[in-house]
Image 1 (spheres, rainbow, N blue to C red):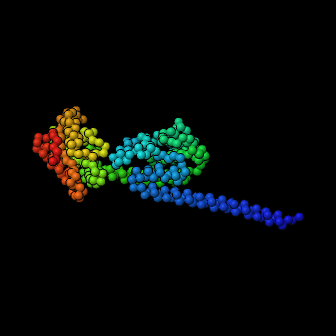
Image 2 (cartoon, rainbow, N blue to C red):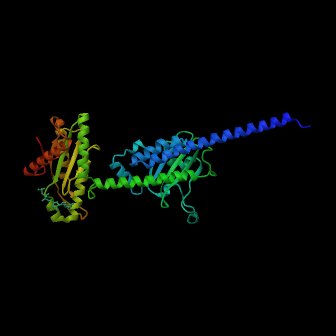
Image 3 (cartoon, rainbow, N blue to C red):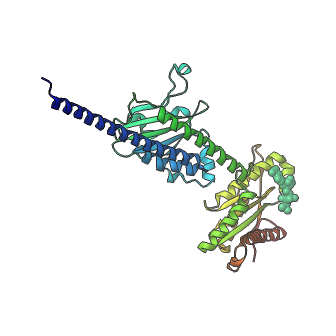
Length: 376
Ligand SMILES: Nc1nc2c(ncn2[C@@H]2O[C@H](COP(=O)(O)OP(=O)(O)OP(=O)(O)O)[C@@H](O)[C@H]2O)c(=O)[nH]1
């Protein structure tokens, strides 16, 4: 017999189930929307990063949070250590980025090309359980209990430049069967951003260094001096300047040729540098002249550093690639910033400091060379 009450109850139950399903779908859609918004915000943030440091800082800081990951690391191929050298010169301290890994060869990334690679194209992400034996190098400083990982190739024009390494304590987070479109898309944006900032940093570096000796150029020293004077005034420490000129350098060129002269310039730069602290700055001002900015050094300490440089250059012969051995000496003028200059415009003070060191150098040359004279 037809029970109208039962039919109504069925409809109601079906209704309720449909409503629950709808609620679930709405909730899922909202969640997905929220994830998408967070990822879009991340994309915008990395695209807007104007330096290597800012970019990797954002990746390591934001990606674990937005993607709910327990560890994110980045491996970059840096065959001749060019990236590391340039970033180091530009002041990036890699101790601040323990998840940044540099490898010397593409093979070290772990994307071993399969025999059929020619047919399948560039490497694909590798997802699955974490195996310490093979994966530990990609996850140094990992949290205990790492269970599943994704190694996502970073590709630029089909060239492997590195890998984005994602890790989770959840064993089901990355499995081999999982779709990888999303993480591949993310990795492609990261790869473009990385290539961009690295090229920009390289250009910046080239514009600030002397190509012959690898030390800074005049443009960098002039700029750095302005920054340092501002900081020294705020933090009340001394800055000193050494103006260094190789003695009778023309004779070196005349006797050993331009090539020999270049070798001497490189070696002089290296010997000066070896006597400096990391916070000091060495620049070649053109020709055979070098300028050193000594940070947190008064005239006494500047003179001591200058004497060490003098010794290091005159103390041991320069052996050229031809086997020729040369005795080289330098003359050095030292000057320091005085407190009474605090009220003056920074640009004027900077020029004056270098001019004082230059005029002391002139006296050192006049006094017979191979000596240090302080500006007083
Ligand atoms: N090899 C080489 N020589 C350079 C370079 N730049 C400048 N020079 C040379 O440096 C020499 C500088 O000579 P001078 O300014 O006369 O000075 P000096 O012979 O060092 O004599 P004092 O400074 O008075 O002791 C010149 O012969 C320049 O040609 C360079 O990049 N490479």
